[in-house]
Image 1 (cartoon, helix red, strand yellow):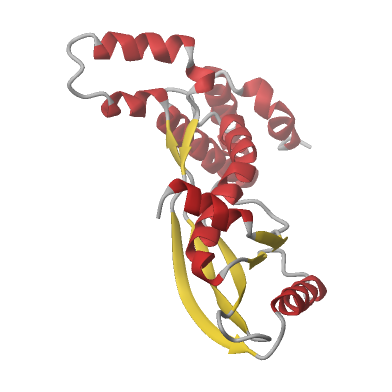
Image 2: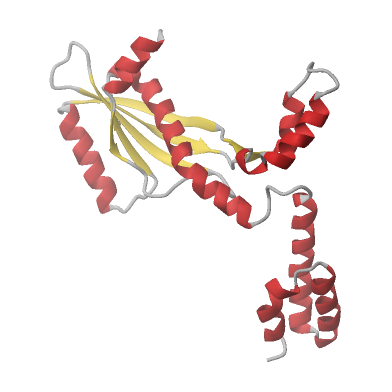
Length: 224
């Protein structure tokens, strides 16, 4: 199938209901999809495909990770990536999304496709099913429509995912060490809540890590 044929089929695709929530930043997301098509040669019939798209937790591809993508470029590749990391770090906040299509089922209904689409949408709205998608498309284009939908979902989620990861400092070099340090601080807070003697060590650790101002209100709350 050439690009023109793909574009023509996608032009006939309609997203009837978009999921209310975006793809999660720190875990997998399950989207319940319904794909509705007319059946060729069977007027008044509708093919309803139903299943789940599972989006895995977005994977960070930082400038450091991209270094491994440049092989065979000679000795200048390393220094260039160092320069790239310094000058274009904000533009290299790349996320990798992976999708799986699961539990696909198909049935034919004695109903008009447009009516079927509206009924499925109405049912999802009434049940407040925020992770439901309803797509209407040509029968031959159902897989294209589903893949296009997943990419659109990733595009919508990307700014939110990047903001969440940036807030947690996960794009910075040494972010794994930063996560371990914060996890240890959380454990120290738990001990300090139960043992007043542990508070002095917690305060010293926060100052040593340069995080006292960030945790100051919570730390002082231990003494109230």
